[in-house]
Length: 301
Image (tube, rainbow, N blue to C red; front, top):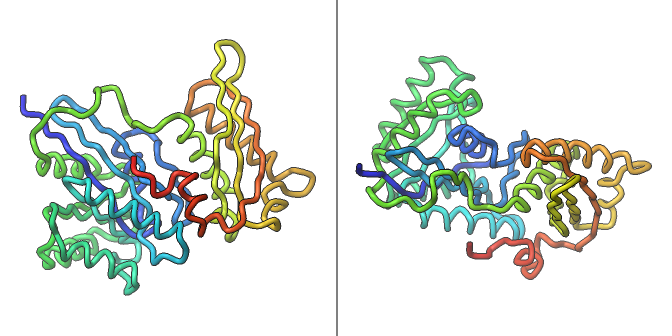
């Protein structure tokens, strides 16, 4: 049997549904999703294996105009994933009629399209928010660009037309040997997923700039044959003034964070855990090369 195998980079502006699409494609949540933009910071690898194909998806940070060094590292993640990819899935959010707003970010995307060194599938996401006629008009509009190998209207959160995305990708992939065993869905460690779950809950529970100024490190992870696994996590913030916000009055905010994160971690790991959270200040870590490298940004996988 000729097995199709290859890497697929999922790219787009922030909050267009890249992580939601990856989770839908894999039928399992491996990439965190919140209503806030720029939640994804690092390239997330997810593997979809069937008898006749193996697709290695790369979920990437949203394309932004860099405001500090962390943003530059995130953009590097996007460029690296494109370089590694056999096929690119570009996502547009059509809930505002699907037009690319004029911005420096959209110029980056247009430049990527213009280069067109690799096959590109355009996914028009959130078509459930517009009429069928509007969706068809958008398909015709982007067909006129003559830049895409396929244009697929989808609603990632509803799992609508996601199977067609898989079909279009498989058609474009080369024949080859599978890179991973059939039962592996990601190569990331449990530590990574636990830190991402905690970060997701920070984005959900805290307002304004605070979530963007945080990073999560797993200081200790002890698996136990009897009793609960022990996880100690450090929440890193940029300024002293942010530490009491994370902790909250009488520790109520961090207690709520701990309870919410623990439940999600237990659901993911399918086992009970004891979760310990601590808050540390690392001044301006988002603009510190050494700190970013320590946190795993810009480090070649």
